[in-house]
Each structure stands twice: as structure tokens, then as C-alpha cells.
Length: 110
Image 1 (cartoon, helix red, strand yellow):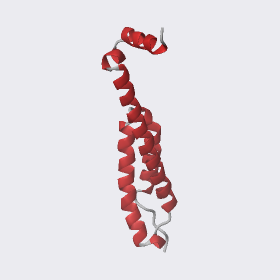
Image 2 (cartoon, helix red, strand yellow):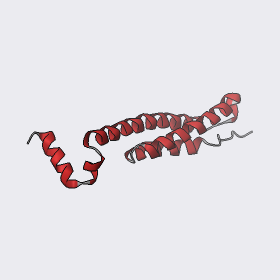
Image 3 (cartoon, rainbow, N blue to C red):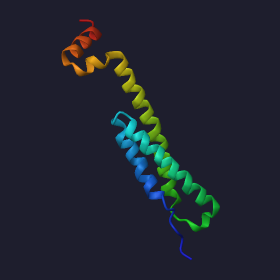
């Protein structure tokens, strides 16, 4: 009998990669993709542990799961960074270039 493929292994791998790539989208998009990847990976891990001899692409699932975990860490750090920038400069300074230049001059000590 030929080995089957885990149903979500490729999807988990793609979502794990995309979660890292989209960390610059304020962290929200990548965090969402990584969480979805982890949920799908958990379902496939349960299937794999019930009958490991039936499935052949466990490596893709494992790599995708690891990438999703890395994606979560990077995206959480990205969210913390954007919140820190927003709290330091303020929302008004981010929308007004003249005010932002004034804040930057104050930061540089000029």
C-alpha cells in the first residue's frame, strides 16, 4: 500500500513561510497566518501520531510548524516595535511630516 500525504502539510508549510514574509505588515497579517498554520499542524500531528506508517510528508509538516512558531515570535516583536514607535512619536506626528521632523530634531538634540 502506498503512503498517503498528510492533508494540510503543504498548506502549513506555505502559511509558515508567508507568516515570516508578512511580518512587515504591522505584524497582524503574519500573526494570523502563523496561528492558522499552527492550528492546521496540530490537526495533522494528531493524524500522524495515530498511524505514522501511513503518512509520508511529516517533514513538510514539521518544517511548516517550526516556521509558524518563528513567524509568531517575529510578528509579536514587530507588533511591540510598532506600538513603541506609536507611543513615542504619537499618532499625530506620524501623520504630519512637519511635526515628525520636529520630533526627530528633538530626538537628535538640535
